[in-house]
Length: 177
Image 1 (spheres, one colour):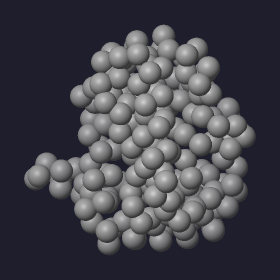
Image 2 (cartoon, helix red, strand yellow):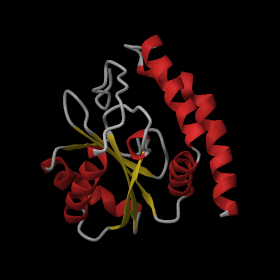
Image 3 (cartoon, rainbow, N blue to C red):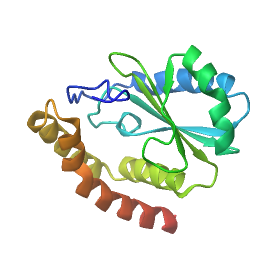
Image 4 (tube, rainbow, N blue to C red):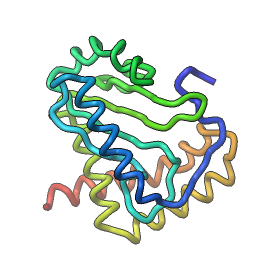
């Protein structure tokens, strides 16, 4: 298990409306910690999509003025419970996790204007606007969580094709709006 993976059991729980408030509270803390480096903060991931199951981890997306400057805040983030993991496999990202041994938050920060920001927001908005697709995603995640209880990699691999298909639809849909 690597240092970022405090999730050993794949867990899916029913949507909790309190996740939206938890996001708002954490976003305010991040604005204070990152001291003006962040232009916008968004709630992403399954906890941001009403009515679907999710791992109970709040995913947060930040838009940075200059991504390189985020590195200067690693110590400040650590004082607020975050572990800084750098790009963590995705060039141009700064990734932070909070909560050990049970993760509670993921923070993904990209340079403002990054295609990654657009992709994440398009996926979220598409799922919210298309509840039938969101339901299919939720059902797939529940099935995979049972199949890969102790294997996060298998779980992620299992949903990869569906997510990529939905991302293509989401980006096309977003361009038409």
